[in-house]
Image 1 (cartoon, rainbow over the protein chains, first blue to last red):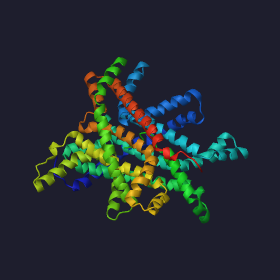
Image 2: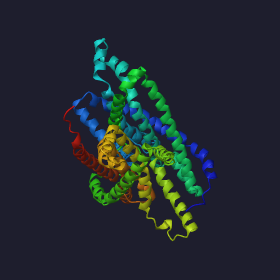
Image 3: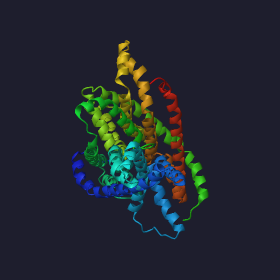
Image 4: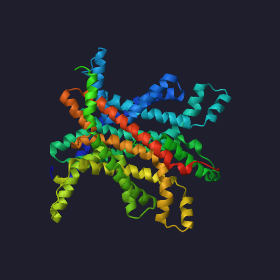
Length: 261
Length: 236
């Protein structure tokens, strides 16, 4: 199948694939932003137990986590124009990228909302009570006390979600978006050097996910620096802390279907 | 093009025939992945020389790259490897005789293996070290202690993650269409393109996946109750 293996092609394809890195990162960035906004909106009814909205957000989360992202991608690409046609909106000229970002945004939104909910709930309730006792309003308590702590707890899960999103963008080629995987397939079929292109592709993904992981690890250390204790205290707390920390992470873990393959 | 609600049902019935393929891919990759995962996790926990860096590299590579890339690499790379070896050693086996679904099995098993190894590893680490020491103190060998004491507890601890992995692989199996395996997703595509009703067909496929995911979750919660029986509290 194809031309004989030649490692030099891997290096010559790297810059060509890097040219489309912008599209991949654009999808990741935009859908991440959309996902965080959607996630907050969806998490609020569940955090404050708003009657009807709570059920709606539960169904939303269940659907987006219970179906494969590839199916969602096709569903939005083919379904949205038809539904919007019923209300006289024409979407025939909308670029494909919009559908892709919309789908990924809604998909990550479901996971984000779970992450936000779990992280906010992981902050000790006494913290909020203490904030009220000093005369803070609910909003102030949330912004100054709960949010900073929740951010630190949520970062490892967030990191997983970003990397999962990055890897999911490899499916955008199915709608004809020229991101890295799409470009790799075109290059491969042009020159018949499939293996070399995919090795180059894998290397780029590896480097990006590695970088994201390291960056967010730095962020995590910074956000959790309030947890630093004196050495002696640390030793006695260590076992207990590790255990509770692991449990929170397990609880936060991107729930069902969150393998982010 | 008009919305045709009745076609959702038609597509639903037609797509049902592809469920076994999806389930085969999921089950095979999860089972083989689990075996790989246990091996890799034990190598990493016991830091076996030589194998340790290999295991770490494998997990990092697989988790850092998309599942689709693994599939494409195996699909295009494996035949070259097998045919090259076959020529060298004079085997009669050629890559042509591997069915398409074979590539999906191999590649998804490798993918699942890396994710499973993390699940197994965190499960094993969740078991208190004292348990192993207690088993040793009453004269069990390490394999005995692992099999009788550590693994059952680790399994209970990692069940939620395990269920996530299974659902992840179920959803990942939709990628099999790229190597022309007719799973639920590919069947939906076929049904859609012959009738030109894409939205309805994918809606039916989404419903089927939603149902399958729901079933896996229910099954997990039943097993979880059963497997955690030993842990039902008591003193302290």
